[in-house]
Image 1 (cartoon, rainbow, N blue to C red):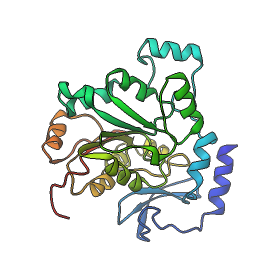
Image 2 (cartoon, rainbow, N blue to C red; image 1 turned 90 degrees about the horizontal axis):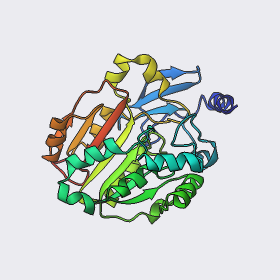
Image 3 (cartoon, rainbow, N blue to C red; image 1 turned 90 degrees about the vertical axis):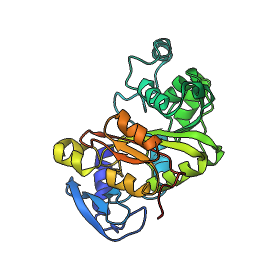
Image 4 (cartoon, one colour; image 1 turned 135 degrees about the vertical axis):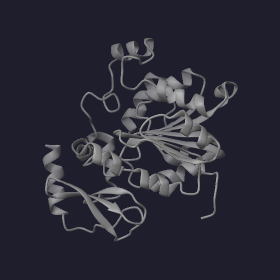
Length: 292
C-alpha cells in the first residue's frame, strides 16, 4: 500500500521542478530511472544525486515518525524485552548493528589515552543501540533522533537521553557521527554545516552512507539501482563529498584503508576504492588546507 501511494504521488508530481533541492541549480543530468515516473538526477553544481520528484520540506517530520519501517532491520524495529536483554548481554554481536567497526576507526583517530575523554554526537541514533555501546566503551555520547517513538524507547530501555530537537545538541564535540542518515536528510549539506558548528576546531565528521559514486554504478548497476527511491531521496557520492570538503582533509572510500586514514590525519585528502555499496567519509571540516 505504501509503495502504491508513493507511485501515485510520483506520477502526479512528474512534471514538478527538477532543480536541485540543495543548491537550487537547474543544471542536472539523469543518472537512472525507476518505475517510469521517478528519476535519479545529478546536480552539476553541488554534485549531489537526488530523486525526482523531490519531497516536500515537511515530509521528513511526518514520514519518519510512523511510516518509516524496514523489514528485519534493527534501526526501525524495536526489540521486545527478552531480545533486548540478549543483545545487551552479548554486546550486540549477533546483530548487524554492533559498534565494533565504528569504535575500531575511532581508535585510529585518537591515542589510547584520549578515548575515555571523547565527546561525540550520534546523529540519527534511532533507539540508541550505537550510542549505548559506545558509552559502555567510555565515550561521552549525545544522541539525536527525529523519531520520537524510537527516542522514547531508547531513553526508557537503555537509560539514554536521546534528543528529538537539533537545537538541543551542544557543541565543542570531538566527533559528529552518523550511519546511513545523510541519504534520508531533507538537506545533506545543511546536515554537514550543522556538524561543523557542533565540532571542535580539530573535530571529525564521520559518516557511513550508500555509495552513489560512478565507480560503484559501473561495477554493479543492479544494486546501485535498488539503493535509491522513496526512503533514500539522496544518493551521496565521492564527487559530492569531495566538493563539500574541497578545502578540508578527508578520507573517502568503500572500505577502511589505514594508509588513507593516516593521510587524512596529516591533513591530506585521500580517495580510496569506490566499488563497494557503502561509503565511509571522515573529514576534519573545520581545518582548511588550501584557499577556496
